[in-house]
Length: 85
Image (tube, rainbow, N blue to C red; front, side, top):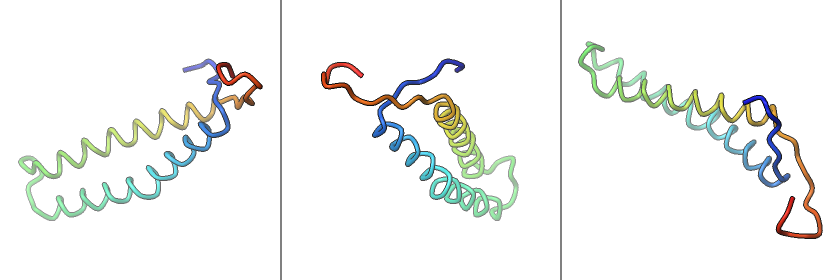
């Protein structure tokens, strides 16, 4: 994604809020799941551990996508016409 992403201020704030939630709430929760699953022993046959690591992978990918979108965001102000930005 190399092109600028045009969005409203409200959309940008939603993007910021999602990043914040993923980093401060979801990331620690998944880390805790991984930690608890590790305590169950053998990691090769530990389905809970593998599921948590898979969730972690999806989470980190989503965070990277959102950060990139934020980096390329251009906030545009709404015009008087509500059908166009």
